[in-house]
Length: 183
Image (cartoon, rainbow, N blue to C red; front, side):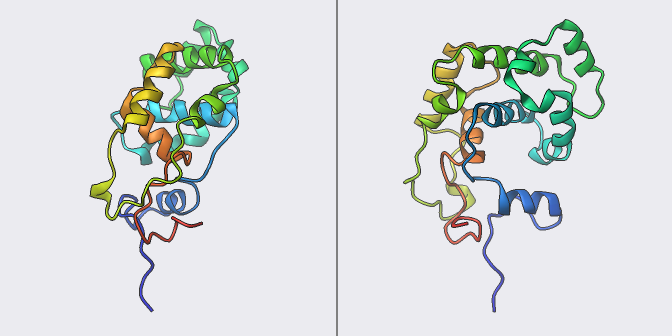
């Protein structure tokens, strides 16, 4: 019996990364706070390895009040300083300030963040044959990034928007035949 096919990006060495690929990446995530968490984590990942963020995710959840939009939206400069001093997260002032600004922007969205983001879902996109066939951006990710920015979101360019779309199941970029594609 042959080994099951899996996307190559998580490698084989890190059990946390494999579990993320097999059980979480590409699965539908809905709800404003849950989608907001992914927006924030994708923004923090920019320029870093996703594994770095994944290993710090529980620290991020604790530091950002489990990504409760109303709680984070109420953060003050004192909270921003607290986050900058937290060694359990990525300490980047621009990204921390963006996370707070994005919570405030999410509060003002008519219909909510989850509904806005899910309007860009493309569940019928064909399966990529290899990871080389997976784009970094798409017209939909460019449109999503543009709309989020129009609502005051930061650190949500087209590449980050596409990573979000992949992570929360708006598109299914598990390669053709991947064991996680049909789960």
